[in-house]
Length: 305
Image 1 (cartoon, rainbow, N blue to C red):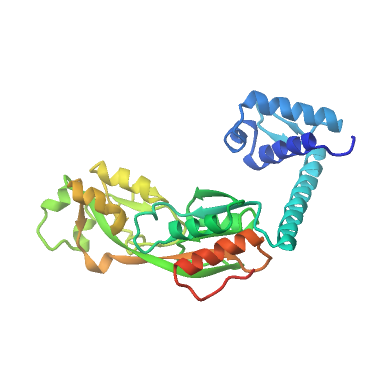
Image 2: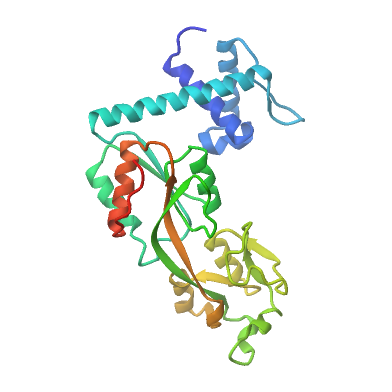
């Protein structure tokens, strides 16, 4: 193969995305390409390398032995390129490059969340940085951080993972809600936990108990989700009881579509944290965004740079 060109690097990036997505079809979203274009790019790469990198068919997608070696080399190559770009930024003392900020869902209506103000301040100070925001559940953000695929995220995890630093930013109050046509509202007041056992609950689709009702074996948990948007849809259907942040539920309460089920002992506070790797050096751009987030939430604790 000749010396690497920009075209070769683009082909290798396509290959990397295919492998990490688990196949050609799954890579369409990550690459924003049609599957036929992805297939053509892979064919071009295999011709240029003079080897078969993967096999696809009825048995699914899998790498050849050569493909596994090339994938490992690709990962090292692009990690080295990212490291080089970050170090150049630090030498120039100018924030360039690209940052991915991962958020848990439905934070924008929380009056104590100042992520918007932090992004505004960051973009005004560093207009050359491209910023991508994604919405994932906390466990996914943590795994992406530990894999080195992102540098910072906003998480709400009851169980903190080794290797990550969690800096408290803000919290939200979570209460039980249901549709205003739900039959529990016709029960005698006050509503007790015993009443709740007669109805279906939307549980959080997590591996640990995050809500006061998650561990209640008497509750029929026939639906689960990891995000507030999906929970809201289920509650508005009229079939379920579940937790929502008060700030997020307010719009439907005002419309008369949702009602709060007042059981004070079952309400709880969810804490949100700026989450980063415990070890490793951040890019200059990421460090500036981290500092902006901490500043706007009046945090004096600093994350490693």
